[in-house]
Length: 627
Image 1 (cartoon, rainbow, N blue to C red):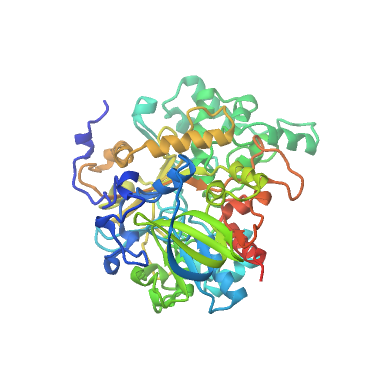
Image 2: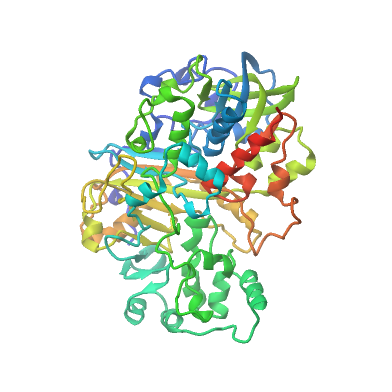
């Protein structure tokens, strides 16, 4: 029986709602200062001394107040005219305070001089973009988690990315020494899958099974517990015990073409013998990892994601990558790549966190009141949504909305470090071909919801560190422990307060439509969800999964932070949906071309959702600027 909101604890007074929750476009004013949120002339919040966004809970990511102005501009065609001239002039104005924007400011000073005056404008209430730090203090000792980009895929780093990390003092070997996190596959407890009653008819937690790596301890006993039809259970048993090459006799080129032209779930049904019901269990395995379901990814792409298939291609192993987690070979900070953003901010503005370095940055408290000081050569202005960037009088002009005021600054150069699909609205004078290319790259929605639990006793009693959840909104859930780096420590044997992360995306209502339309449809669903919708979801899952081990859903949830990213992962080109363009003619290559005194830096410009790509593109974009 479905539980009521009261039974789930929706009435409980937990730390979950932000002060700016439910702020609307109308309340922003757009033309007049909003008294309750009025800032100083520089744009910093009036209470900057106590202003510390990493501790905010409730709706984060694209939080209320961060996107309304941009939506008015890009979706509703609102005109922003007659800005107030602030009289501020810079060498560079950066649009976007994510890692690419911060890296662009860093590289600009290296190329044009350390005395260069730089202003970074960020529409959110914190810097870092998707590299979001979630900091919890409600349960006692500080607990950290990440609210967006998390991994450092160091084997893929270019010389440029490696060089930046070295200059920031980051040592990958040191990070690896403190890294003991495996995305729900250990080290404490076995991998598991959770079937929920609402979707599958009963709550069932099955241990000893890893959907991603394809490992199963005992196929006969394991799949017999799955709440599926007998035909589906039998198809899974046969699939996992087969060892053959279904393409025997075909050339390598022929096999490659097949693997790039069929979706993973279609392959499971056509060649793997799975029923529709059984094959559909795999759809959300790639949601958080890729931002798109395995039903819209090719077999070749899912081999790279480590999903089980190799045993049908003449190999003894089940999975493609052989990795235990969603990231492959990675290193990590305890707040994800927020530490890189923080180290970049510190490099640009040392006064915000004196004494900080890569070995202690996880424990450093940054002084947000010092981000936008008039006498600093580099300034970072939060809650400032840019609405126009133009070449002007041998330089550039940048107009933005801050605290309901339309303001304008001037600069020698401008750097667009926001996502591509927004740029046509910001810079309407761009060539038509470039604007069309920018619109092609539709970002993929992403959700990371962090829930602070009073303790980890229920997880420990069940012998799990997380679970795959094929029937729920978030495809995966896991405890966040074991990233003991940069001065922070949270060991697996600590049974006290623990962040639990729910990771995934929003399934599109129709997975047969073009993938970019899928992303737009998923985004609309995500934006329509309230914080209470997310709260109800995580409470339902935790109650069903952990309740049998003594978890009290009404008492054991301490805080909830929803990191909502309607524009999440950068758009990379997919086998099933995108053509192969001639060199130099792919949308991202056209979209990133410099325009007068304006250059473009972001992960979209590299058509890949990786932090090192954002860094590489920042370096390239600074090189595009004329001396």
